[in-house]
Amino acid sequence: MGDPVGEREFFELVRLRPGMYVERPGFLTLAVYVEGYMGHAGRHGDSVFAGWRGWLADRLGHSHNLAWPLLVVRIAFPGSVGGPWDLAPEDDAKAVETMFSLLDEFLTERET
Image (tube, rainbow, N blue to C red; front, side):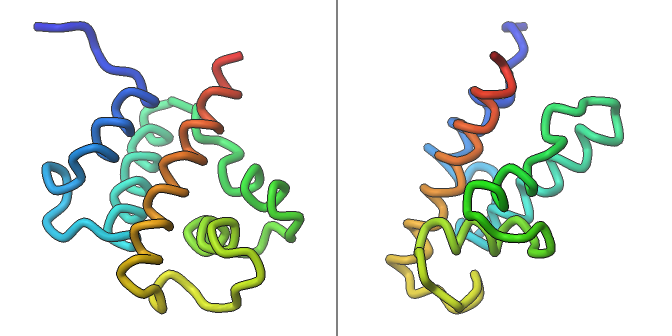
C-alpha cells in the first residue's frame, strides 16, 4: 500500500476528478462532501480544519455568522448577494475552483 495522502493532496484529487467522489459534481454537492470530510476529521481528533470558516470570514472582511459555502461564493463573486443555490453553470464551476483554491491556501498556511 502507498503512503497516505495529506489533505492538500486529497483535495487536489477531488478537484481534478470530482465525479469519482460525488455523483453530481457541483459547488453545493462538493461543499457538502468537503463539510463531511472536515466533520469526520474533527470527530477523530484532527483539528487541521479548525478556523476554516473564520479564516474565510476574515479574508472577506465579514462577520463570522455566515456558513462557509456562502463565504466562498462571496469571495468568488465580490459584491454578490446571492447564494450557492443561485449559481449559473459557469459560476458554479468558478465557485468550485475558488473553494479548492481557498482550501489549498488555508491548508498551506496551517502547515507553516
